[in-house]
Image (cartoon, each protein chain N blue to C red):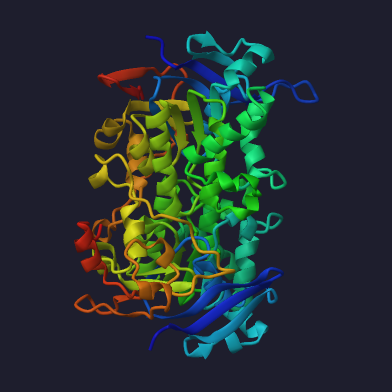
Length: 337
Length: 298
């Protein structure tokens, strides 16, 4: 059985100008021990669908139009708030982009870890403090005994993000969800955090959903990649076939527009034309069709469903009416990274 | 030949002075003696992590913050001693583009007027000449001149950055300091702006000082790269030498840390360079290890 299964999730925001269709019929599964990397840009629905399933969206303006989110067999969308609160921070750990606004500035780091532990475990007193020290040590914060009594402002950006990860994993979550958790950090600090997550995965057997806009981060961390655009899944599958032989024109464009050493001689980068869709007025068919040089007339009319890619690895799915390899061949272009 | 921009031993510090009890306050040197030159039509990348001093260096060069020490020569003229009147003339030739295309625009001002503003302030043109010039600028950055009458909220992030770039080009500058110009943009839009920078350089012969933390983009845009750490330049070299033959351990740790978008090359261990334990000595000098390739002594 999958640890997490999302079925036909649709989320919208009702604003004065109309309805913003943020998530449109998203379905996927995450198996225990798997790391899923979700890639997308603003308006792709990558963050909104996760906040919706954790009950973290303000409703209104947000509305869940349809869907089920089965976590260990329970539908999270049907749970009352107090039950959901026991799962968040307990069985599901979360790390968000900005550690400064997620930490309470007037409480010590130790106190903030202890509160999570007190809420979700039976630990108290000395055992509580020892567990907090152990957690700070686990995420690579030097001198944890001393650091425990410090406040967030006494931590650097990277150290704060480590503290956030310590809080997220405090109760041995089965599932860790991180949303742009390293985006605000320097590259060297990001590299250390990614190493840390890889290390924690193998030591604790955590299942991870890592949301990012950075294809490089996904390549370093994930087993499965899911590319989202316009509130839909465009492509999904094991990282190797998706990176080396993408089937969605959006995935292909993202990979191709990245600067890398193999392409250093060319003077221009490949650019995806146009701009992300306005989800207040989403395009009728495939949301990427207006920017897709390989779009067929049908792409502008009907929404393509995710279906298995013939001849690729198990689990490689694409939502496209066009056949990317033949479209690329016809245009004399190469396929993957 | 005189370089377009020549920066020598530039220092910019904060703090200092005395507190309310008359005790001296410590000085923090954000930029601690950096030197480099930029030729006409060249792009130099100034790379570093947060706190390296790269943005402060950009502002001190443009005299938006006066440097404490050192010299900034633009087309041979020393800028650090110029008064506001003479400085205004040089401001036309040096423009800055910031990271955030949202906060740079005035939400209540039509974007056409926003782009026209420098031309009006500097009394360059008015009336229909002004409208024509602004329309030209819109076309130059790949925007439809019909958009001139619209407000910022009607544009996407990439379009807003184009509007900012159009404004920075209004006074026909010869140097643009771009401080993280693509960081805030969606990934699918970043390549568009990078290509626009290239095209404008080809057409107008602009020189850029590109301040960035993203080495990937720097590799595309820059002929030479300067790596900054704690207020000092630790390595300065032609772009390909930085990537293929980095000499300073800090440069190497930056390069190692870039996530590679290829699943077959993952699972490396990252060895971080301990910046705090390796703050360069004040008297450390740049040594030329290869022609044009300089490394700070350790």
